[in-house]
Amino acid sequence: MSERCATDVVTVGDVAAAHDRIADVAHRTPLDTSTTFAEMSGAASVGLKLENMQRTGSFKIRGAYNTMAQLSDDVRERGVVAASAGNHAQGVALAGDLLDIDTTIVVPEVTPAAKIEATRGYSAEVIVEGDIYERSYEYALKLADEERLEFVHPFDDEGVIAGQGTVGRELLDQYPDLDTVLVSIGGGGLISGIATVLKEHDPSIRVVGVQPEGASHAKPSLEHDEIRELPEIDTVAEGIADTRLLEKTFAVVRERVDDVVSVTDSEMSVALTLLAERAKTVVETAGAAPVAALLSGAVDVNDEHVAAVVSGGNVNLTEHGELARAGLMELERYADVDVAVADWPAGVSAVAETVESRGAELDVLERTRRTATDDPNRTPVRLGVEGSDAKHLRSVVDALDSLDSVAVTSHTLD
Image (cartoon, rainbow, N blue to C red):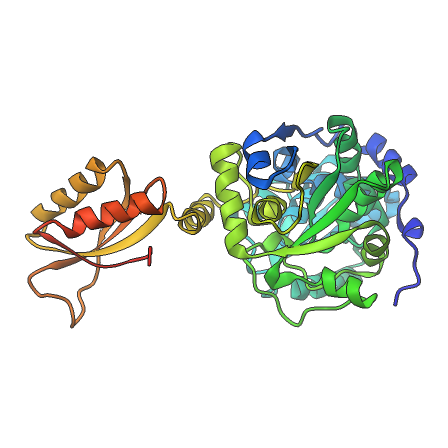
């Protein structure tokens, strides 16, 4: 068990100093209220703290700049190295560009290409090393030792935690009636900073961490009062795919965070989908996790004023489309339908006309490879159909199956 106290790591005074230090660098991101999400969750009100609209597309510039601005001239001259799944990489790279410090970033193989290219766009050297973050982290530490570079930790650093805490200061200004705040946890830097500010202001404000089921290490660590490391992780939310807290974040989280809950990848996909549709904002799965906890009922927020910190929006558009489609399927508003069509290709027009006449949208229509069990007189075709709900989609499937030229062989609504 760690003997370190939260006050040894970060205080509200540290966060106040960080606020002044980054004032001309980091944006004061908007807080967008959502009546839709309030109604869906039973909350009195819901505020979305849109850190996906921050410079570099996530909150990470706050902590990275706060730490790097305090480095000595000698350290700045040698340069810094960091390990990151992507967002911390961009924060360090931008801070280095602004402060004229050479930066080297080590990222795992799962890092989206968009994040890698954006990091290189800030003049950083990017090295792809390791299948998960932990392997990248180990390589970056080795590089720091061999080349005498300053290692900028993504979360277990006093300056980084204080910088992330500036999100909490803004929340208090923008949402004074706040009862509960939901924050994603990867390594715990963001929630540590936010909790420090909120608990000092009003200890009754509830601070709840959110993790993917496939990377849920914080809850068992708190339950056993010691850092527990996961042997492996399994989640689409690569931005919070850490295996453990570390000493500093654990010390703060166990004293200042009220609870930690977990959400599934499917629930995060639904949240990502609804954020795009209802809040008109593009987020990554890590950023959608707090909204997933809100909408899935993982946290009871009945009649409370709730803030969900949308921590980042750095996602490949192709991946976002795939996740949104998965979210629509979870909501039973999208179905894959396999059909066998006679009189190819003329029979396809009957398929398109039927879907359209039923008020649905034909998203995908593709000829698939024939198998030994397929009717040789019909062509196998896969459809992607979007509708308003499961009942609507079933009516479309029934209409297709009633056509003489079409036979429905399978669908995902069962």
